[in-house]
Structures are given as structure tokens and as C-alpha cells.
Image (cartoon, rainbow, N blue to C red; front, side, top):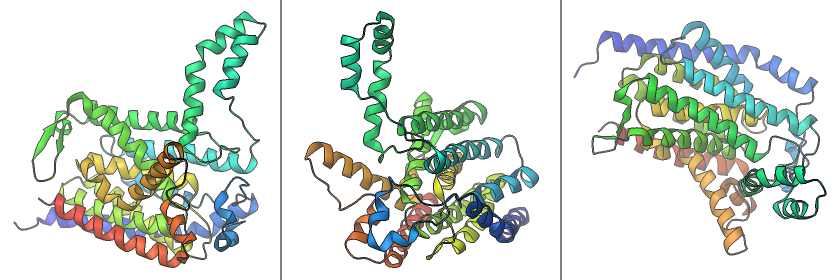
Length: 376
């Protein structure tokens, strides 16, 4: 079936936006670098165990929050030139909310004070011995919250000075809930029918809401875990958002097509400055924001079940963390030398460049598989 002139115009427009966003990011990247150095927003976190690896000691002092280059460029271009309340309002809003959470974490890890969580055993002891009955009642009522906070530490590294895991999970839940509300209630009943590869559509009903919340939270954290080597997350995101540009164009979702292409352009510039030796690193501000955007833009074009392929290397990375946690708390030992997975290969002697490029290639193959399946 021939491609219409209108569709070709949309594709040309999207590519043009990608080129312009890349050029714009290049123009203001030196300013961002200067600001990050001036305010010492650099990698100095004493709780970052990866800095103890010999091959990574040169990363000490490298600016973080370089992901602002992508987040701000994409947000400005979308608000100024691609603002459509039905389709781009919520993706940009959730991206900015997630980026804000990541930015707060980045800043607190540098300028914040050490924070501690009271453990459950200590809380139970206070309930027994505290002299104030009001305080005992308060501790008893908030015991489930204390249990949640302590349990959530299994999912993260040393809490340090930044935003703690339970706080991240709650705010990410809000971001996911906003996305679910938008798709389920605002976009209409057609979005309740989820595309199932090779099998048409299945109506998820209200189960779509928790599925979307989980997808947004899981994907945002998956990209966050993959942001650990120069160029790794940026290059993989370029591949994924390029695929999403193609798929959204084929679905006829013009605003989302332009949004994805704009993101690709900004990511190209970011990755140019992020390949080893990195001028700056993405930080949580970029990885959480772009991870959330990746999930939303995949869900809105009804390819949610293809997320494990379109975000393959990110899911592998978070999967390795989950396996490491299970191994630690069940058999009492590590499954990998270090998680996420890229650090395992680094400790096995792979160079950073070798690991990154092989991960890119593997990711590209699986994304191509995802595109192939999506076309059926």
C-alpha cells in the first residue's frame, strides 16, 4: 500500500525536529557543562561502590546531571512547537516529574546530609519500652510504613544522602498513576484493548491500570540501572527511541512521532559528549525522566507488551539486579561479581568500550526483533 504524501510530510517534519534538537543541544551543551562544574555537581558520592573499581577511578569528579541536556531540550521543543493537550501534555509532564525526582536525588547525594532509616527491630523495641503511650501508639500505627521502608532497601544500594528507595517508589507510583489515568480515562476505550503479538487485541479492562503503573515504574528504574558506563544508556536509548519514532509514525500518531524524533536528536548530542571519556554523565535526572518517557511513548502506541524487546538491555540490567538480590537473600551469596550486569563483565576483565558496544549491538538486534513483531 503506497505511503501518502501526508505521512511522508510528517516523517520529514519529525526528522527535521530531530536535527534541530540535536543542533540546539550542541549549542548549549558547553553552558550546561560550565554550570555543572561551577556548582561542583560532580561524581563524588562516597557510597558509590563502583568508584572502587580500578578502571572507574577516573570517573571521580566527572559532572553528573548531564541528562538535563536531553530533558530540557525535549521539553522546550515540545512545549514550543509540538504541544497537543491530548497526546504530548502527559508524556512531557510525567517525564519532567520523574526528572525532578532524579534531580533532587542527584543534588542530595552531593549537598545533602546523611540520612538513616530506623530498622524494624528498633521500632518494636521502642514500642515495648517507650514511656509515652502516645508515642507507642504512633509507632504501632506507622509500623507497616517502617516495614515498607526497610524492605525497600533490598531494591537499592546504600541509602546514603539522596532520595531513599521507598520515596522514589512512591513518587514513581504517582508518575505511573498519572499515565494510567490519562490512557485509561482520557484517551478512550480503544486503548483498553492491548495489542498482543501475533494474536490481535485483548481487553485488559481495569487491569490495564496496574499494568501501566508497573510498566512506567519498572522501565524508569531499568534505564536508571543501565546508566553506569560511558555511552551505554545514551546509545541504547537512541536505538529505542528511533524504533519508537518509526512505530509511532506507522501508527499515524504524529505528535508522538515528533516527540520521539526530538528525543533521538537530543540523545545523539548527549551521547557525543558522553562516550568515553565522558564530558558529563546522565545522572538520575536523565535516566528516570527518559525511562518514564520510553514507557509512556511505547504504551500510547499500544506496544506495551513489546517493552521487554524495545527496552531489552535496560530490562536485562534490572533483571540482573533482581537476580543478585534474590541470590543474596536466599542462598546467601552473589550470583554476579557485581550488579547491574555491565559491572559483572567489567570485573571479568572486559574494557568499558567492549562492554558498551557489545551491549549496544545486542540491544539493537532485540529492538529489530521487536519492530519485526510489531509489524505483524
